[in-house]
Structures are given as C-alpha cells and as structure tokens.
Image 1: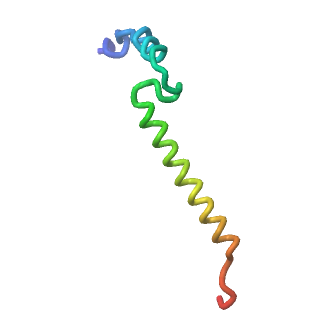
Image 2 (image 1 turned 45 degrees about the vertical axis):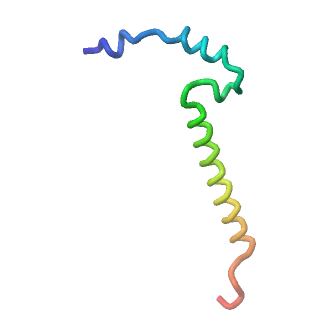
Image 3 (image 1 turned 180 degrees about the horizontal axis):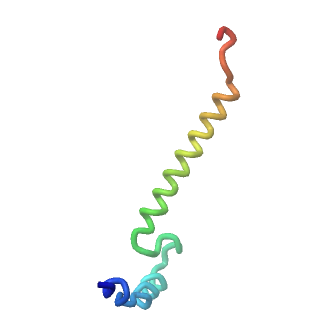
Length: 66
C-alpha cells in the first residue's frame, strides 16, 4: 500500500547532471521552471499595476462636485 511512497526511484544524480550541464541562469535550469518564473512575473506585474492604479486614484481624489 505504501510502496509507491516509500520505494521511489532516486533521481538526484539525473537532476544534478541536468542542472550542471546547462548554461542557462539557475532559475531556468530545472524542468517547468520557466513556467514558474514567468507566472511569478505575471502575478507580480499585475500586483504592481493594480497598486499603481490605486495610488493614482487616491492622489487624484474625488471631483469637487460630489
């Protein structure tokens, strides 16, 4: 029952060779890392943009007629 958890293949040597053979930046070397980094950048950009829009709206204020 627990064999799939306990007896997993050791893939450390494969991953080590993969990382050390690559000449890309360290955050792009592992599989799926480009997906993780680019999604982080997209979320960060969306957060910064929404913060900038909110700050602009606060600075601009309400019109005098309201």
